Length: 224
Image (cartoon, rainbow, N blue to C red):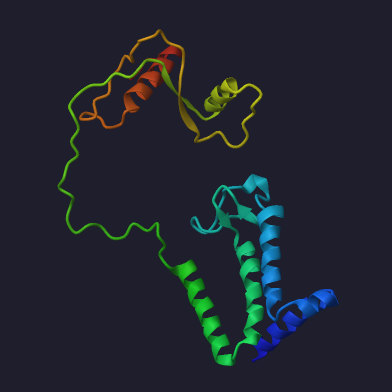
């Protein structure tokens, strides 16, 4: 009863800040929707990616971005933003009969327990009872791609993109960015190493290894 009285008082306080013409036309309980919408605008625009230096970081073993608002690199709202968006709907509890208000509070508590304590979609589950006996099969044939394919990683990938798009300056963290691109080669030239899916199903492995060995030797080092 004390909780419901406190929520009713909070609802009245919200309406006290509204102009009288708005207050009179506003349906009962609509202040919760207004507060929630205001929180979405605040945390989804003004405080999105703030502070920028912490974009993409998280705490709690992968849960909960440390951004104040919406973290667009993780596609996730902060716990603070989530609370400010959904807690205003608690102002609707005084409008319900006591039994329904208690039921609504219990449902919210169960959802919170599931979110913080439950296993979510990314959990792989238990091991298989029996192994998969099928083995993949590909045609035992070597393919040779056109020559000139190179893999650029991190800062080098940014330099390749900026050279291909004059006037374009990439932003963001280059670490982890990988891209394959073509360099000029004679027409009809083929790669020096081939790709046989029956031997190695990774088509880029041999080309990447050759590229790294060439760079290693160019630095005056011997390949072990």
